[in-house]
Image (cartoon, rainbow, N blue to C red):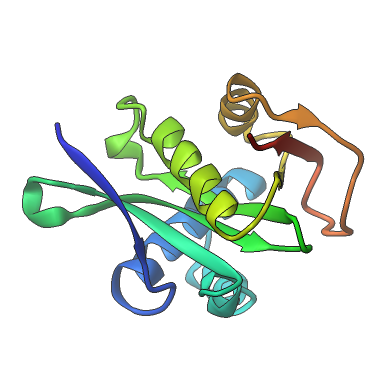
Amino acid sequence: MSWAIAREPAVGGDAVALHRAYLDEVVSRYYGRPATPTEIDEEFAGMSPADLTPPRGVLLVVRHRTEGGRAAGCAGVRLIGPKTAELKRVWVRPEDRRHGLGSRLLTAAEEAAADLGATAVRLDTRGDLVEARRLYARHGYGEIPRYHDDPYAEHFFEKHLG
């Protein structure tokens, strides 16, 4: 299959659909049962599209070049300091996994972070998201001490760019 990754608005259409699908998966995994619509709505309400909007952030969407350009996944990058970016919501639809899209999104996100002026990228994840932790380790991210107080974050990573 052929894929394209591009910067897209963090509001409306596919951005909303991708973020809600992401939340459905991570909330369901956290609780060990299907997420309720209310739980997804509550988590979605806490997301700020401004975080992933230029000049301080960007949303990347990977799409099928075929299948009408269907959105297959996303990754967000936002500045959290003058030279530090944070990776947010790296996710690929289950039916589109096993094509290397997570790696491609991660590479594109690092390039976007550098374009924003960052020399380092940080991220957090949960312990149950073992696939994510493996992906970050494969791409040179090392574990660091906690850098914020989100109670759901359990593992913190950083990679220096360049």
